[in-house]
Length: 272
Image 1 (cartoon, rainbow, N blue to C red):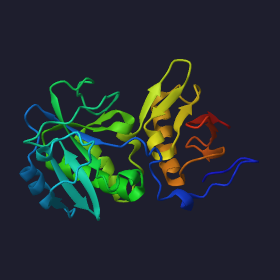
Image 2 (image 1 turned 180 degrees about the vertical axis):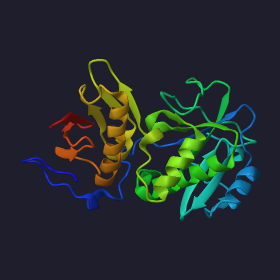
Image 3 (image 1 turned 60 degrees about the vertical axis):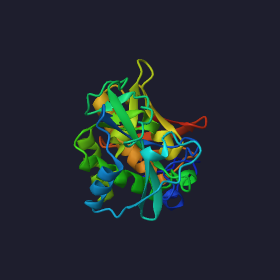
Image 4 (image 1 turned 90 degrees about the horizontal axis):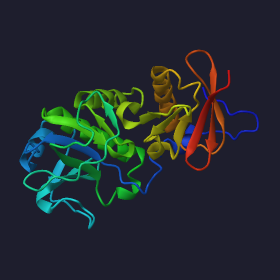
């Protein structure tokens, strides 16, 4: 249950239920890190996806002028009528390894040296809608199929959060979400704790347009704060962008306030 405080605007979940990502200027990438020389070939990707429950067609890619991979290292994947590009496969060269700030159940080095990257990105024709729910869901489903089929993936990176996720954890959380579970914030949203300044999320802004700034009081217990962020992320992705303050109950029986600040922050503080 979400409550707009006195004087606050009303919130309609129906308005934004199809709008997941709001940062349309940043093209999201799902990046698979492989050991040196172990990236898959086009034929191996075809076999992996043919054995999966997702219907995918393999065609010559329609790459944009900004593509970071050569035609030999790119394949177009079509699922649910949406076209994605898998860039960096053999025999082409790898794509650039993204910066990593958050690790989720994996021990890949932050600088990712010794790894080669393959990236799943929305194709040119759907790039403008990369943040919509249908595109995001299909991209995550394709990512989970690839991760499940390749045993030599060291980690999966989600660029909006600068995160690296263990393949098993990624598959588990995405499959659970696609089956009707909670939004898979673990791995897709990072938490940065700052002494004397509470905690701030990294990556939530892609989905809602704003990052959370959790008060020092609520962030004093890091585990509880992370759970709070997971709960709020699930609710906020369903609601969409907020332009006015709301209140939300939490598990301990209390209530927290979420108040917009500037154009990209939601301040989270305890009310009761």
